[in-house]
Image (cartoon, rainbow, N blue to C red; front, side):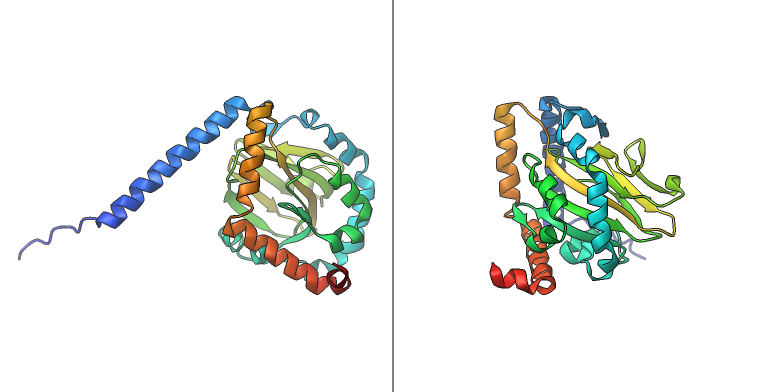
Length: 258
């Protein structure tokens, strides 16, 4: 019997693999350059003291918690993260990650801000804010390991509802384990792979905030430009459109007055 030679990858597949490798090297090079220019730590966990607005959030966390309590009862009607960004299905397939948005890539959710006015006021005072929302994890939720796409942002979680036992509500960021505390902020670099569990019978809620990484003035200007250009991508544009559609249905009075 004549042996059949193994098929060789097509030229298109070889080209695609080569471009993918080049893309990964380029991404790694850009992230390395940004890390060298960063004015704050490039480790998994960053010092909250590097971000002056964190103290204001923590000082007013009970006000934010009180406004959260006014809307959390309607969480079943909140959009799932996958509804806003289908790519998130790679992180979680079950509809256990809810979003109550305040700001997203230059767009303000007026209805949600009116429902939580003091929270909105505190968020509006954060310099360069890109994203802010109540991130709601249902009991038993698990977000698979994933990483952020861009080192020019840093992420903050303000603990608002952390069910007991707290050690079963946790996040692994690189080699660091985060156990949230109500009223305390955790600032971290989400380009490290991170994974989240809520192995309790309660609901976990944090106020999730994305802000620009501090850089020297020239690099900060470049970073702002990149963030603005990112708003033109299909992924971000689609998420913003879905958020607007949800808000229009949820707050028809706001849509009429706009």
